[in-house]
Length: 124
Image (cartoon, rainbow, N blue to C red; front, top):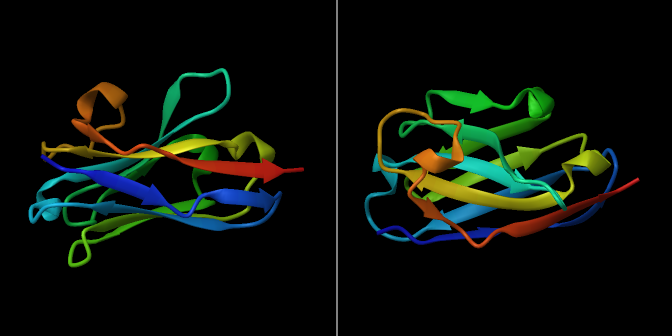
Protein backbone atom coordinates (compact mmCIF):
# COMPACT_ATOMS: atom_id res chain seq x y z
CA UNK A 1 0.00 0.00 0.00
CA UNK A 2 1.30 3.44 -0.96
CA UNK A 3 -0.18 6.78 -0.03
CA UNK A 4 0.62 9.72 -2.24
CA UNK A 5 0.30 13.40 -1.39
CA UNK A 6 0.86 16.09 -4.03
CA UNK A 7 1.84 19.67 -3.32
CA UNK A 8 3.19 22.69 -5.12
CA UNK A 9 0.24 23.65 -7.27
CA UNK A 10 -1.03 27.19 -7.54
CA UNK A 11 -1.78 30.15 -9.77
CA UNK A 12 0.92 31.32 -12.14
CA UNK A 13 1.07 33.63 -15.13
CA UNK A 14 1.76 32.30 -18.61
CA UNK A 15 5.47 31.76 -19.06
CA UNK A 16 5.98 31.06 -15.40
CA UNK A 17 7.11 27.93 -13.65
CA UNK A 18 6.07 25.63 -10.83
CA UNK A 19 7.49 22.54 -9.21
CA UNK A 20 5.09 19.87 -8.08
CA UNK A 21 6.07 17.36 -5.45
CA UNK A 22 4.53 14.04 -4.57
CA UNK A 23 5.47 12.49 -1.26
CA UNK A 24 4.94 8.76 -0.85
CA UNK A 25 4.48 6.81 2.34
CA UNK A 26 6.12 3.49 2.99
CA UNK A 27 9.61 2.08 2.67
CA UNK A 28 9.27 0.63 -0.83
CA UNK A 29 9.05 3.82 -2.88
CA UNK A 30 12.02 2.83 -5.01
CA UNK A 31 10.16 -0.26 -6.20
CA UNK A 32 7.45 1.81 -7.90
CA UNK A 33 7.38 3.38 -11.30
CA UNK A 34 5.92 6.85 -10.86
CA UNK A 35 3.80 8.96 -13.15
CA UNK A 36 2.14 12.34 -13.39
CA UNK A 37 -1.27 12.79 -15.01
CA UNK A 38 -3.55 15.78 -15.34
CA UNK A 39 -7.23 16.46 -15.81
CA UNK A 40 -8.21 19.72 -17.47
CA UNK A 41 -11.70 21.12 -16.90
CA UNK A 42 -14.25 19.07 -18.79
CA UNK A 43 -11.69 16.57 -20.06
CA UNK A 44 -10.48 13.12 -19.14
CA UNK A 45 -7.33 12.51 -17.16
CA UNK A 46 -4.27 12.41 -19.43
CA UNK A 47 -0.72 11.20 -19.11
CA UNK A 48 1.96 13.85 -18.57
CA UNK A 49 5.20 12.12 -17.57
CA UNK A 50 6.56 8.95 -16.03
CA UNK A 51 9.83 7.80 -14.51
CA UNK A 52 11.36 4.41 -13.88
CA UNK A 53 12.25 3.05 -10.47
CA UNK A 54 15.86 4.21 -10.69
CA UNK A 55 15.06 7.44 -12.46
CA UNK A 56 17.07 6.42 -15.48
CA UNK A 57 14.14 6.29 -17.89
CA UNK A 58 11.57 8.99 -18.42
CA UNK A 59 8.66 9.52 -20.79
CA UNK A 60 6.67 12.66 -21.60
CA UNK A 61 3.61 13.48 -23.54
CA UNK A 62 4.49 15.50 -26.62
CA UNK A 63 2.89 18.72 -25.44
CA UNK A 64 5.22 19.04 -22.43
CA UNK A 65 8.50 17.82 -23.91
CA UNK A 66 11.22 20.39 -23.39
CA UNK A 67 9.14 22.26 -20.79
CA UNK A 68 8.51 19.72 -18.02
CA UNK A 69 10.99 17.49 -16.21
CA UNK A 70 10.10 14.54 -14.03
CA UNK A 71 12.59 13.41 -11.40
CA UNK A 72 12.64 11.43 -8.19
CA UNK A 73 14.58 11.24 -4.96
CA UNK A 74 14.23 7.72 -3.60
CA UNK A 75 15.92 8.70 -0.35
CA UNK A 76 13.14 11.22 0.24
CA UNK A 77 10.31 9.07 -1.17
CA UNK A 78 9.40 11.94 -3.46
CA UNK A 79 8.77 12.45 -7.15
CA UNK A 80 8.84 15.89 -8.72
CA UNK A 81 7.46 17.57 -11.81
CA UNK A 82 9.32 20.73 -12.71
CA UNK A 83 7.24 22.81 -15.09
CA UNK A 84 8.59 25.71 -17.13
CA UNK A 85 7.03 27.98 -19.75
CA UNK A 86 3.58 27.22 -18.46
CA UNK A 87 0.67 28.01 -20.74
CA UNK A 88 -3.06 28.38 -20.08
CA UNK A 89 -3.62 24.97 -21.66
CA UNK A 90 -1.56 23.45 -18.85
CA UNK A 91 -4.31 24.41 -16.42
CA UNK A 92 -5.50 21.20 -14.76
CA UNK A 93 -5.56 19.15 -11.62
CA UNK A 94 -2.28 17.26 -11.53
CA UNK A 95 -2.12 13.78 -10.03
CA UNK A 96 0.81 11.58 -9.20
CA UNK A 97 0.48 7.83 -9.42
CA UNK A 98 2.46 4.73 -8.51
CA UNK A 99 2.78 1.52 -10.49
CA UNK A 100 4.22 -1.59 -8.87
CA UNK A 101 5.49 -3.04 -12.17
CA UNK A 102 8.92 -2.39 -13.62
CA UNK A 103 7.54 -1.21 -16.95
CA UNK A 104 7.22 2.54 -17.37
CA UNK A 105 3.58 2.87 -18.39
CA UNK A 106 1.87 5.88 -19.90
CA UNK A 107 -1.69 4.68 -19.45
CA UNK A 108 -3.87 5.52 -16.50
CA UNK A 109 -5.15 2.00 -16.05
CA UNK A 110 -1.63 0.69 -15.37
CA UNK A 111 -1.21 2.64 -12.15
CA UNK A 112 -2.24 1.21 -8.81
CA UNK A 113 -2.18 4.16 -6.42
CA UNK A 114 -3.18 7.78 -6.86
CA UNK A 115 -2.84 11.01 -4.97
CA UNK A 116 -5.68 13.44 -4.42
CA UNK A 117 -4.38 15.95 -6.94
CA UNK A 118 -3.11 19.51 -6.86
CA UNK A 119 -4.58 22.37 -8.89
CA UNK A 120 -2.41 24.24 -11.37
CA UNK A 121 -3.92 27.34 -12.92
CA UNK A 122 -2.10 29.32 -15.58
CA UNK A 123 -3.46 32.75 -16.39
CA UNK A 124 -2.95 34.41 -19.76
